[in-house]
Image 1 (cartoon, each protein chain N blue to C red):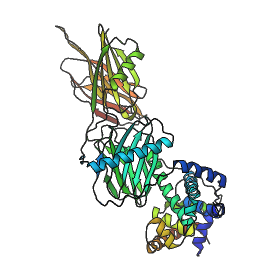
Image 2 (image 1 turned 90 degrees about the vertical axis):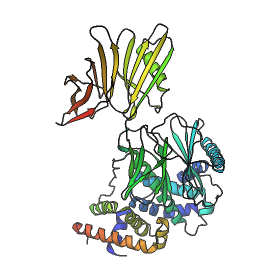
Image 3 (image 1 turned 30 degrees about the vertical axis):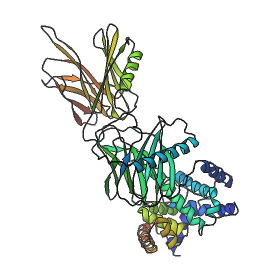
Image 4 (image 1 turned 45 degrees about the horizontal axis):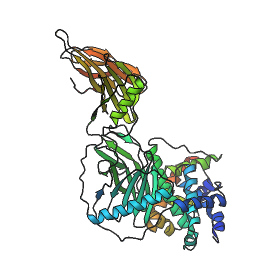
Length: 155
Length: 380
């Protein structure tokens, strides 16, 4: 498994942040990221040779999280999953809340493009949309956030 | 990078994923044993049709079926059996040693197919795509069989479409998947529902729609007698196995002796099921008559006809009410009102009705001030 450990240690935080930003609870985000890296580990001979292993992990994590969302929402319809606000900073907390309120596709794009720092092409490939559509969603998301964040008087 | 983008990154910048490499490797090791078994791609089947194939009936539940049952070709049957065996082997490898029944649903649309197994409690699903098959498990649910949102399970989504599959709640005529953009009526073979649904849309839930209420009856006659409540409950359970009701356990709510030979047990099960079980102890044989319904039951217990005063003893068993149910009554067709007894969250009424008089409906007063009326089926 040459290279997996280095790959994991170098990318795991970014993957976790992106999945967390995409929504759902912290527990599901942790589970999705763990599952994605476990699958990558189990098939590292293939994934390691992939042109973009990180994009592979992100795709797997997103699919896994979607799956868990569905099951969970089915099992607990109408029950909101509370999210722990781990940051003491009000701005960060508010921003995360605003991201969480974005439409899902916009949230996904923000998570992959900005938090995971993937290209529009990579983001589009993971989400099954074109790079141009990624730009549109990102533009809309940022416009919405910009309007909503004004009351926070962020410099 | 503009300021807002930097702020967004900062908002999540403190998050760390703390699982160690060793933990990931351990999970990978576990996943290797359980993970997807890849099949050779069988080619893309672009036939946009749905074929259902039932290998072994899952229980005896036969709710009203309004969906068509397409035919199955010999080729499809052979493929199904092959896949079923493959799934079974994988599930057994995963530690499921007591698999009992299997149902399969083949969605011939890009090669999608699903096979459902049961070990008596949990259910296991194999989902085939042109990339292979995955296994997953879900606890079965029996839902309140009236139109409402129900909990069910789905198989993980892949690509643009997810597969949703689950057991049809007893008494349901239709299952709808709904999301923010609309509703999709799911297909069913009568005992399981299934469908390919958009993976990209926000999923809101699954709704079961009962077009009609149901009543199931079973009569069991056997040697001996059941004179204790425990023995009578056991006899009622034996009768339950004769009827097409999912294996929900009926628990005792109340009971009475109708006469020196007949005991009446009022029972309730999950999903809003209500039951009246009459146990008649004869000379050498006993007879058990079980009625199960998903609506309030109005049941005649005994009819003694003598020359002067026929007596019709009746019971109205009412479904569990919300916590704010205060008091209530059964209203008879002559205007007479019989108070309801609230026990263990259920409302019960025992009464003798005059000749020619029927129970008409139930009134329940809520503590909050409102009240609800529940019609009762007319039964002599």
